[in-house]
Image 1 (cartoon, helix red, strand yellow):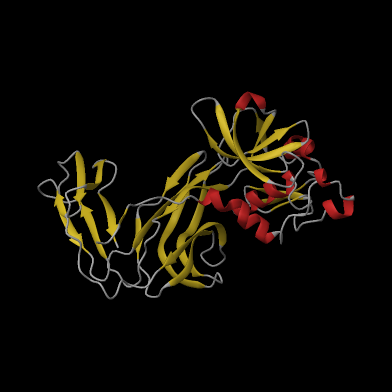
Image 2 (cartoon, helix red, strand yellow):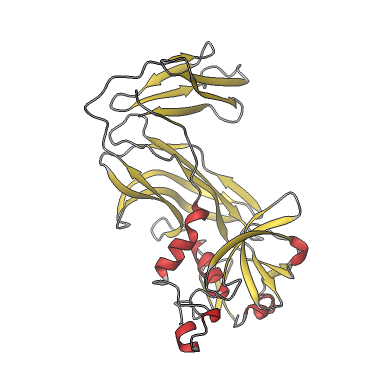
Length: 343
């Protein structure tokens, strides 16, 4: 009997700290280590210090396709020189180059404390809090995330650019050479005061060395209005070879030069071989909903797009002993399909 694995989502935020530290070639010990300053404060490529709060936020903004250095940043695609300096000076520096600064947060903003700290706003929550990611909160050069009341933060700098949000791909198992493959989805948030138009937006597959393999999908001539969110549709693809890969979201204003906004790693395993016997299972489903099974992998793909009259759809799977192992329902108005894999 093969084990049933259920669809899950993987978010890019969970990997942000590992990616940042890799680009910094590791974090030096923090101030709390008691080491001399030349062992603690090591310059980074943004002209801040590695694994300080300022360095991490500069990196996060850069990941959104916006050039950000200690000496200035892009405002609506135009370079504006200033000196950000210490964290408690960032809000004043931002105002000096025309960026909006207030006490109302948006996703992708920079949170500023007058007590010498900055952080990145990951989400704005309905309970009056924001979720932030940050480094060096405790002077230890460590990564943390937390929910904090909006009123506990002095100011928010509205970086005028694009932020990647809700980026997920189907988790394991992903098999090579399967018909259904796997899917992904993401959103782009325009935090600026003007619309931004991209010649191309792509979700691409790169190998473990970040070498381009193929495009999952390219969206042409996309305009994202000010203070708006653009959502990709469900993107489905497959891969021919087993191995480690990255799904990368990138944008291009001219169709030639690309800016990477973020990525998710995933692993493709070889198609199942040897025991190809399908598990004994009973599948009950509503009339009008088709169920398809893969070949080299054993899976069920449920597509309700041919029956828009169905408001709620349920997929139930039981093993040969009669034990129910899947019972998933979803609203047909929000999505037309779902799948589980038996592999």
